[in-house]
Image (tube, rainbow over all chains, first blue to last red; front, side):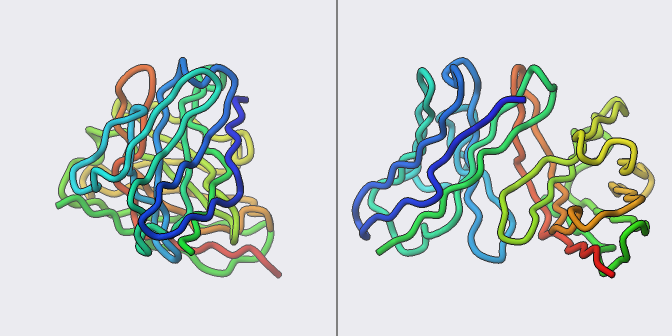
Length: 108
Length: 120
């Protein structure tokens, strides 16, 4: 089945920009969705269909997808952004959704 | 307001059975794609099963033949019957609604999760 690769951790200082990657074979041809999971809480979608943002999600969150890498970008990072982030796609070969392994974002 | 509330988790011995429930409000379960997604302790998210609005069901290979997803339209509730449980099924189980816009779908609402622990 389709494999999504994320870095285990990313660290960023408050006010700076965090970029979390999600790698996959020709992932640019798929739609990528991103979820934020704060400790002890359920996941929340922050970006869907590569770059769309649900209502209530700050404009600081954005997404892009091209080639073999999709990227979640968080601008002007705040302490409250500290969480695990997961990318997800639909795997057409197995006909089910697939998640990346997750990236822990630490705000220094 | 959309809400999903899971119940039914607990401690169960290997080989045992458990049924999880997910009570929905704010929308109609039978008109949507409803999923179970699990997360083992300290691990990532793993999709488990889906029931489409038309009633078709699909499972991850890891649970196929042991788990059954279903719904009760009169109660607006989703279920997951889990049989022949193994230690590796230990996880928080989330109920999640998904939105389908070909060629992809994503999870727009999640419950708070219910913990299933399989241990002797």
